[in-house]
Length: 212
Image (cartoon, rainbow, N blue to C red; front, top):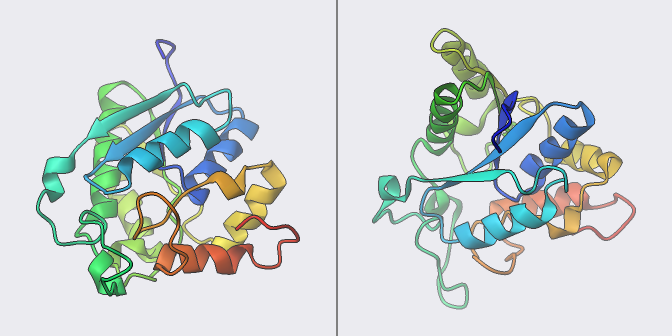
């Protein structure tokens, strides 16, 4: 990782960021992958998944940042893992304040500190958890604001995509879709019922093969 990289990619082991990694490789963009541990109960699973599903040429270039103290003690079920046999979990329980804003801020700061000029994030236009920082409008306004400060250009190429469009791109790029992980409620096995799982399953339905 001593070689200077052109870009930084926020990665999580999920379908969206993994697909973007494959796209950047196809476009011959040299990048590091940044994994942010924000105290999520599935952090170990996400990181292990990222190390297994990212393109072989870049999977050894994952750097990690631990900001878990920011959300220490949060009641969000992204932080405090529910017992899915006993606990009822609704969308509002998965809310975490300013999460995507924190990700982009940390990524931009990390990149600028190391002289990296581009930050890529695979956020898509989604309001499934009623989060204000998941919309295409939010990403558009934030990237414009960040462009006015510092030296890092933030790119969110999937911000107008649906999950289905990302899945179709992943299929074309040869992404190991079935091995990606993005469950919000379980730290080990996808629950199939949280908003991320439902959106993912709907997107993969009808792709022609069993990638769910």
